[in-house]
Length: 120
Image 1 (cartoon, rainbow, N blue to C red):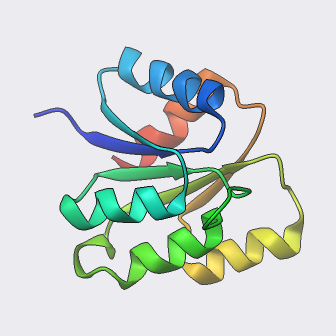
Image 2 (image 1 turned 180 degrees about the vertical axis):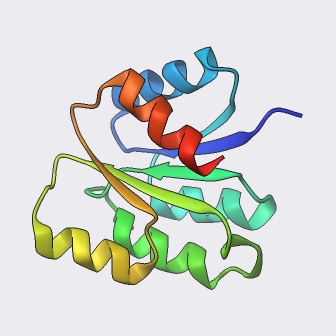
């Protein structure tokens, strides 16, 4: 069975780019345009991994990570933040919320696949 990944980003082109890389590597990919939509999808099913942007309307990535960690089935799920933000304090907030990793945009497709492969 294919591993499932939820890609969350308010920029459609970025979401599609990340999804294309992951689908090309054989993963099943679902997409959400912001944290609120992602949380709704996560309540319906458990994904094997979540890749989320940080700066989004309605709910940012760190808040999404915190909310996902409150869901009973998301304790073991890897949650990766993919953002232009590289501030060490924000990264620490992400770790404190339960993020498994942090990747900088623009992303290198091969590096993304290496990181994803470490978690699933």
